[in-house]
Length: 309
Length: 309
Image (cartoon, rainbow over all chains, first blue to last red; front, side):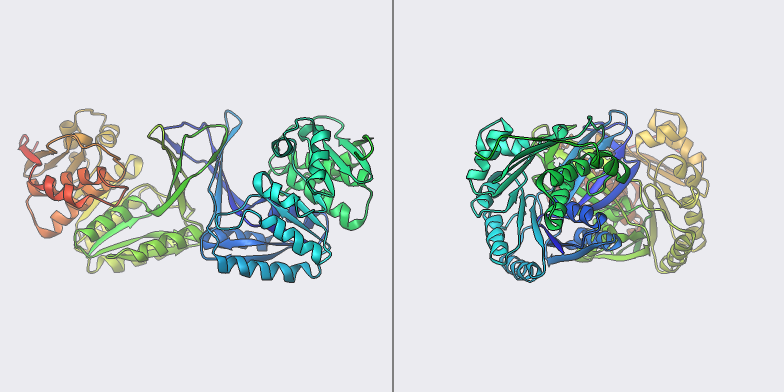
């Protein structure tokens, strides 16, 4: 079983409007809802790849109920979310059909009480017993300590479970110090963390800050992995047009599935890049176009990078 | 008891953002929710005026649950909403704190099944037994026949209950033909219905289309009533600055309370205009500033208009 943690899960709402008119009244022509938050997206892709995926984190209120009801309809993802009193946040993506662009509105998230936080830690320890790997994903809701990912990383490592960390800002900085097995920042997050714009240099810096391995997603350029044994970069054969939302989460699912299946680093990168590109071709986060994925598995190229610094 | 009907109730969500950036990601700093829809706003104001207010219409899904939970916390409004399978719509008002303007996003509403529609009609007939007046308010959700207000008006009149109709477009046009006791369009709705921009002429035309009395809200200019016994116009003593959302609903509550209390038409108009202006000074729809209301009751001026046409 692979465990994913989403402390700030969301009910993702998509509105389509013919043309968004700011400062005016807009009639929404189409409404779609889905469970959101990075860890839930990762779990969904893992389940689609045939893995037993368990999602934990927090859910509460009517929005939490709606999220859990949709999660229950999906095959393969086991709901291990911890109930809270405050309501799960919403995100609203307003798609302007004529302009082809999206305006995003993100609620801050529910305040988690100390008792709820303790209940989560108990649940997390229980779930680690039996997990082959754990992914710690996304932003933090109010009330959760900023060093949370460091604490969750240490707990997982004490239980012998490999940890993948996918977050940004201060939670990333603090989390790295607890020595996760793998950190997956994107290029911007990596630059913000280290002050280096050059991905190889920044990834090496992030390793020095504590991550055993750094896999940096480089958008359309693919992914760079810097490990103790060497570095590799995988790139898609061509630029894939579409919606990049969730592409990073699919890459995490690719890396995790490769980890628990024991495949080599170059093959993990191929899987992550193919899944990422196949997500760009799909409707939304947590989904991927299977035909594109299978086709790209044979087309993603891997080049050896410099040896470990 | 005064009955209000809201066929397309809404969960009204307000987001505050420091500055709305279209085509970008916006962090919402403040989230507020309230039960929405014109009839629910009317019921809330009636309850605040000391009347026994009962709200019916449709509610469903997690958004409907949230709406009903908030309605239960309010004193005075009795929840007689009919449950449906589809989810109650949301409206999202994005307030740009820096610009002071609002971008509104309105979901279309749930599809009501024929069986749900029949369940509503049964409930409506039961509720009319004991109602002193009924207000039919707002837009229609998908699946509800466009002549619904005509049918609901005829049913109420057969039960001897006075009917106030507050809607627009085709539902208004059809509803008027069933001869409601009172129609309350605003100036734009009246012009759209009749093709006349001059309110007195348009109101007279609307009476010829079936309404016994027409009370037209004229925004900051107050309200014009055209009845079988004469016409009156009431105006606030000064322009009131603030948020006009819900001002028309408060005017409906003023007219209804005046109707069931048997006060004269000029006094009904004074009450409607004072409530309307006091709502502009309050936070949101369904609320009014009581001090402003009581002060304006003595300051709204009423002028006699031409005799009935």
